[in-house]
Length: 290
Length: 272
Image (cartoon, rainbow over all chains, first blue to last red; front, side, top):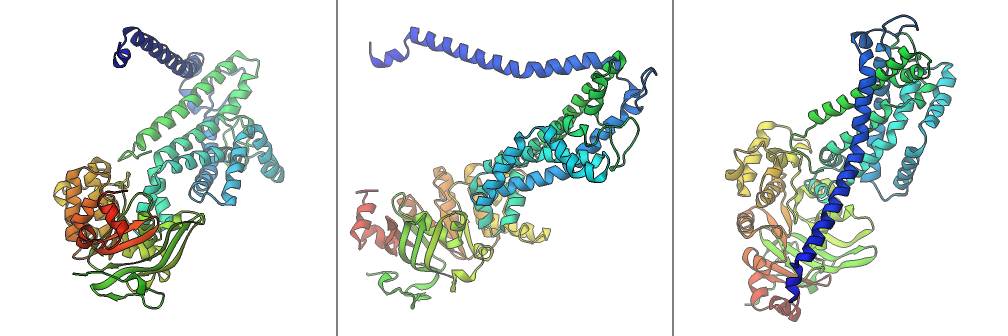
């Protein structure tokens, strides 16, 4: 038998096909294992929470135990405000740090910054809560939305920085050269060409950071604390969905447990919808290369 | 007929050839050395490029062609641990007198692979160099856009598609778009770093055609791997080997009767 014929040997071919099928199956199983928990969580919280979900849930304030109805409008609005505060503080710092680390890499300073943000991303969120407590709550002598937003902002920084850096590094060097060769200054090149080319990836990173911050309970426990009443002032304690869920879930009342499930469902839905909206809005006019 | 462009021996710090036998030098170097991490990539290069002429730089891979070209518009600034010594005269002024933005407006560059800005449309790509340096008059930009696209021979193909993504164009069209983009900032000198090595023969011939027209108004310096291309498009040809300039002469002389043995061996395919 000649060597070339061996390549088309029936037995060999069957063996390769079997290995191919096994590997492909393993990939499909792994993919399913990644997706199934998410779907399961979504439908389980929906099943447990939908019964308590009604118009009141989104418009009414919490009621004391024993009274029927009530909702958590203060917590929903509070979460939006807290994430907004955190984003206002964390996203610009994160993106600018990412630009510095990626576009001005090589210097000692940028290596140090990179290392520190990596460490920061590993710090437990409760420690960040304590940090905000010491820095803002203690001097102010009270819990406040400001402290909560600050804690969430710090939490967002490493994620945003990391993804901004990774996405900017994916932009081919030739693109920067092309822009500079046209006489465009370095900061305009970064702003108009590099950052714009990487924008869809960076937006994804920002979304991840927001989604992570939206579900955080620990750093809010002793910063924004929680509030059973309507409050939008930033220097007062503010309710948030995760803390409200926590408070309801550890209570002994079935009614409150159902409310906690409903809150969890709303939280997941908010993250889901924000993702969806930003995806649609930023579906790039000319899909970027990254 | 002896037609040596420049006798490199007479080039010293003191007598930089503003005028040479054949015309005015748009760009010349004296003792130019570029090192990366203190390893020299080119050393002691004395060369002149004549105004409104096309000069090709040929030579085997790694001989320093691109390094030489990229030192003419401060592209080495981007590379840490690179060092450029020697003298470069651009349009009669020492290169030190230009800041990087000013220099790059005078000395444009077209790269090896087409690299249009992926997030911008065809029109935005062409005028990017003007728009991001402060020119925002729409009518003016539109006029320049049409002019430079005609110069690069792309206008007829894209005039109805100015609003589409630059990535929707073919590779050859993208490269002509990049040429148009470079022309839009109206440089005097255009550097081309193997502008057709990633393109098919038809696109290549279109670009060569536009190079032929461009030399009326611009000085072109083209690095190429393709000796036939050098023979087709250029008035003068420089041969480099191992970081040194071996010979610079009219293209006809280089390809018919080079004075250096190294040049002859390369041209006849004995190595390289």
